[in-house]
Each structure stands twice: as C-alpha cells, then as structure tokens.
View 1 (cartoon, rainbow, N blue to C red):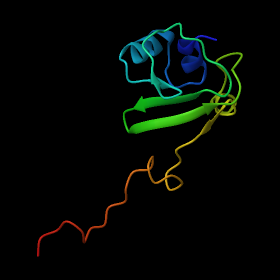
View 2 (view 1 turned 180 degrees about the vertical axis):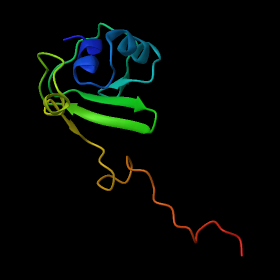
View 3 (view 1 turned 90 degrees about the horizontal axis):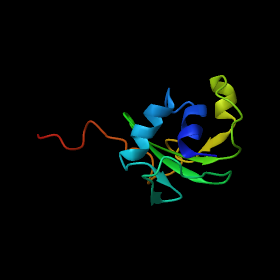
Length: 103
C-alpha cells in the first residue's frame, strides 16, 4: 500500500495531499530511512517516524487499514513505540523547577 494512503487512513493527516506535503518535506522516516517519494510501498511490521507539531510519533504498522474509518479502528492498525515515560530516548525530559534557577 502507498505511504500517502496509509497516513491518510491512519488519520495522521486529513487528506492525501496533506500526506504528500508531509512526505515531500523530507522529515518522515520509514524504518529509519528518510522518505521523499509519495508512492513508497509500506507493509505490516514497518516502523514510521512522523513529525508532529508537539513532537515526534514513532509507530509500528500492525496491519494495513482497508478504509479511513473511525479513530478507534485506525488506532488498532498501529502501535505506539515512544509512549512518554517508557523510553528515555524518545520521551521528553522532565524539568524540575529548582534546576537551572539562579539564587
């Protein structure tokens, strides 16, 4: 299945043209390699690194979606690999108010 179609069906973008823009920006990664082609094939088991406004989302594709359905159906097709607090490299560091302040 095409990468732009998967991004749309998994509800990371609203339209395929938005998926196209995201892919062509060069910030999306498939299995660690930068992707610039919209028609790149994707299969179950592939890992996607998707830039978002609030950070980066790393997912593993569990199954390819048949349609753009409700969010619960889309979320069943992938698993998050970077849940905050589970991986120290992927999760944002916690800040302590006492650190970095001047006396």
